[in-house]
Image 1 (cartoon, one colour):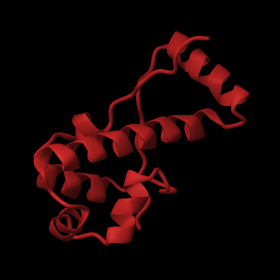
Image 2 (cartoon, rainbow, N blue to C red; image 1 turned 180 degrees about the vertical axis):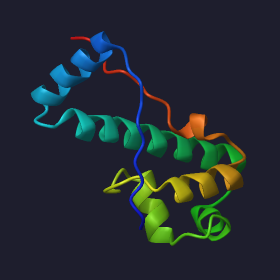
Image 3 (cartoon, one colour; image 1 turned 30 degrees about the vertical axis):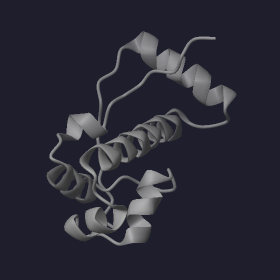
Image 4 (cartoon, one colour; image 1 turned 90 degrees about the horizontal axis):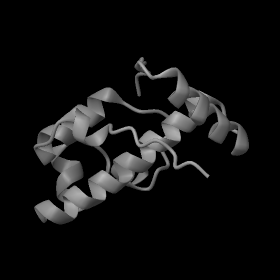
Length: 109
C-alpha cells in the first residue's frame, strides 16, 4: 500500500483541544486525528452500505479491494489511509471524499 500524506489547516484553538485529548489518551496529535478519521470512515461506510443495500462482498468487488481490507476500514483496523482506496469507495458508493473524511472535533469535558 502506498503511503500518502495529507495536510490540513486547523484553527489554533482546535489544535490545542485535540492536543489535550490526544495527551489524555496517550497519543500524538497526528495519531489522534487518524483515529478520528478512521472512526468517521467506519461509521459512514456502515451507514452507506446499509442505505444503498449493497453487501460488503459486492462493495469490495466493485471497489477492487480485498474483503479483509474493506473489513479493516469498516472496523477501524487500518494502519494508514490509502487515498486510492478511498477514491474507489467514493466512486462505488457515489459519494464525495468530503463525505468520508469529515473531521469531528472531540467534545469538551
